Length: 85
Image (cartoon, rainbow, N blue to C red; front, side, top):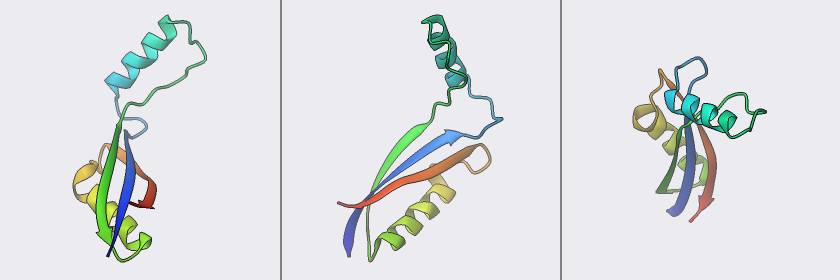
């Protein structure tokens, strides 16, 4: 078994109200960052796991996201990286 470190980005789905993202967007506009059109605030999760291969580790983290880490109704997730730890 090999140890892998997996990084996951979880954000609210488009069309879902994101009050924290709206507050950040408004604050950026008040600081003269007028080119900002939208902000989504989410979570960054790092999972250390063991698996036989990178493919197996990615599949395990995908299952974790679908069952616990991300709410499939209101959130999207992206497995940003899977690297040997």
